Each structure stands twice: as structure tokens, then as C-alpha cells.
Amino acid sequence: MLTPPEGAGAVEQERGDDVMTTSVGRRRLLVVGAHAADFVWRAGGVIAKHTAAGWEATVVALSYGECGESGELWREEGQTVERVKRIRDAEARAAAEAVGASFVPYDLGDYPLEVPAAVERRLADLMVELAPATVLTHTAVDPFNPDHPVAHRAVARARLLAMGAGGVAAAFSTIRPPALFVFEPHQPEACGFAPDTFVDVTAVWERKQAAMAAMGSQRYLAEHYAERNRQRAVQSRYAGTDPGTR
Ligand SMILES: [Zn+2]
Image (cartoon, rainbow, N blue to C red; front, side, top):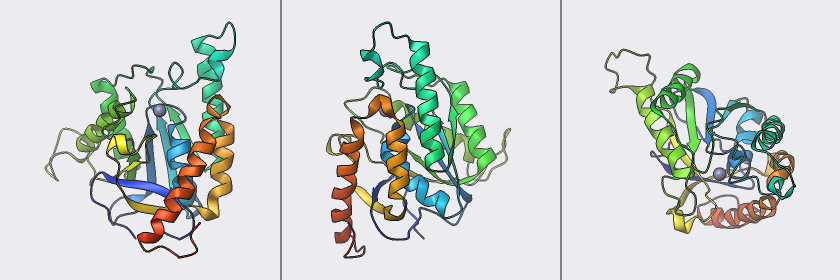
């Protein structure tokens, strides 16, 4: 059992039996991404690990990433935003199914993503409904992406809305605050990401691979994140994981 500080960094590695949990909340994991595929690369293994252990997992995609993160699709002549969104929806649903999660698209648009107060309230209501033990999202800082920090801010604010003023009665339903983790960004050093929690995903690696394969519009990222997983596995051994971790 891990009880991380708020905003703790979380990465995936291979081997081990840990799941990310706390003493509060249900065995539910809520993952919020700015774009439809963000959860796949950065949390696919963590999600599969938890669902394999009997947890429920919900993925919220604030947008489809239709404008900024669907590169392969925009090579096609005559492409349209609506068609890209339909394809991304199908891909993301298949990826979520591969790791045992439900997929909830908010379709707010991307590049730039904007999250109005009403949507923060919607996200808070979802947190109250699910009462997840753990919430996972982007880092607060990402100098190379306009939308990921916006997603982080919305999730952090929704979490505060969901918990209210520390147990004081409010005009809305509240829950005890779920643990908040941030997942591996594309360029960790630039985002100030220092991992302090490693989750072994060896047993579910094929499921993560299946999820990555489902995202045909961003196929170029699959090898990048497979390599990152292998590097974190080596690093995790210094944190005391099984010497055979690969
Ligand atoms: Zn993204």
C-alpha cells in the first residue's frame, strides 16, 4: 500500500505487485487527460494493473486532441475535425477497453484546451460520484504543451471542490480527498517531474501494448513510451524494487 504526498510523481515500470492506493476512497481510479490518448502512454499500465486487481477505472478525456495530437490523421487530404474526432473516439474507447477502463469524453476542444468553471464542477461531481481512492493526471508544468497544465489545474481545482472545506458542511456533496498523482510527461526534466512512485506493470504489459496499438493516429509514441518504461524499470531498482525488474 502506498500513501503518497499530493502531487507525487508516478511512473510505470515492470515487475512488482503494488497498486496506488490510500486508506480513503473506494477501489476506484480516475485518470484525467487533456487529450484522448494521453492516458494510454502515461498511465495505460497503471490502469491495467489496477483493473486486474479488481479496481474500477474511469478515464476522462477533456478533449479528443483532434487538432494538436492527431498527426497521422492530418496527413490525409480532405480531413475534417469532425472525422478526426470520430476516429479518435473509437481509438480511445478501444484503448480504454484494452486496459479495462471506461472512457468518458468531454469534447472541449484542444490547442487551446479551456476548462470553464461549469466543467470543473462537472468533474468535481464525477469525483463525488465515484469517490476514487486515487486520481491521476498531468504535471502542473509543461513548457511544450499548452493543454496539459490546463488539465492539471482543472483536476486540482475539481478535487478541492469535491472535498469542500475540510469536512465542513457545504451547499454541495463532498468526499474525503483522493490521493493525487501526476503521470510521466513527454519531457520529464522540462516539466520538473521527479518520480517517487513506481508501479510494476510487467504482468499487464501486453494490455498496455494493445492500448498503444489502438491509437493509430499517434503510433509514433508507442516506441518512445516503451523505451521510457524500460528506463524507469532500471531506475526503480535503486528505489528498492526486485533486482530482476526489467
Ligand atoms: Zn496530450
